[in-house]
Amino acid sequence: MPKKRKPKKKRNPNRPIPQIGLYRNPAPDSEPATDAPSAGGDSASETSEARDAYWRDKASRRVLDAIFPLDMEQFDKAISILRSIPEQYRPNKAWIYLAEALCRNVENATPDRQEPAFREAMDCLEHVPVKDRKDPAWMANMLRAKAGLGDLKGAMKDVMAWRRRHLETASRNDSVGVEMLQAAESHVLETMMKNTEQAIYGDGLQQFQSGLIRIFGPQHKGPYLNYGNGDFYNAMWYFQASRSRRFGTLVTECTGPHGDYLPGGVYPTERFELILTIPAETNPFQSDPPNMWRFRVPALVTVDFLRLPPEQRLLTPPEGDDDNGRFRYTKFCAFLVTDPVWLPSGDRILFLPACGRTVRFLQLIPLFREELDWLQRYGLETLLPRLQENHIARPDRPSVLTAAEKYQLRREKRG
Image 1 (spheres, rainbow, N blue to C red):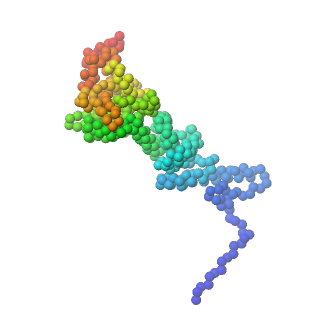
Image 2: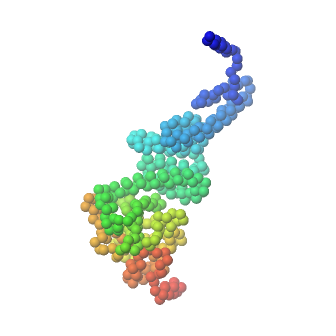
Image 3: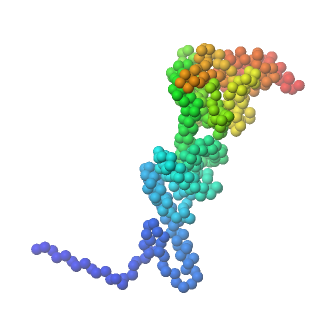
């Protein structure tokens, strides 16, 4: 025989609803319904304190809830979670994560969708107090937002200023945030570089890069991006030593002033790229510990510069990148800019028919302090052949001055 079902118990409608703490089962996305205040002046303040305590706890949990969607690139979901926190209760991390989700959500969108998102992201980051902007994630997202609005150069200047003030501390305390900032920097620099390559070489870019490989050899690395204090940027190619060439070669791409540094933003037909020869065994891109070759090549070579007398064609450390008058991580005080005598004369100039530009290669010869002093006092006539023979930038190379010249220089300094 089938079992008889037990009759359901009827709920007592007069039974009170169970309460949880101070709240009556608050809805997840609404403010808690607190007990009705009784007559008296203290209940209103108690209700406000209860609401604040509730949202402080709720905000912290929702920030944690948003991390997984961010990592899984579910940006719409992360935005929805973070926006559900009332603005007055959003902690700094909520503003930073919301800015990140907004920026990354429209990376590949059309410009009409990108601009409002980037502006909202900047507004979010402005809510973070100035004293709390040491967080590298804050700087990374400000970089994304500014770059998304087209202010690439201004964004990189802000990053360089932030690095000088906070990078050392951030590297010790938040390595993940620093990696995030570095990734954002690389993305912005690549965008800047592509824009510059297109503006300078246009259709001739492929011819230029093929010409580099033909002249300097097929064994190469790069191009690597090189950036300096917001004033210039370029790419750097590294060509390894070969049987016929017993030294490595660093060659710049798109060096020189860019965009607003030139009248009307027009690039001249004749271009100059710089060569630095280094010892074959050197790894020029080693970064830990800092390698002596990781200095920023000054990018200020123009036609007017090359009209100067040969002894005045000197590049000194740019502002903010010097160490007691020397290039940081090096023992060199200046570079002499001259023709690369070790290159065949036919390879010193590269013509690009596709864009109608001519590229002239110039050698950077690093100078020690006493060599620079001699050059400035007595000129370049006797020194140039010796410097061209010693063009490889070896930190341990002997000075090209003779003992008599060193003595003469010391005596005149004392006198």
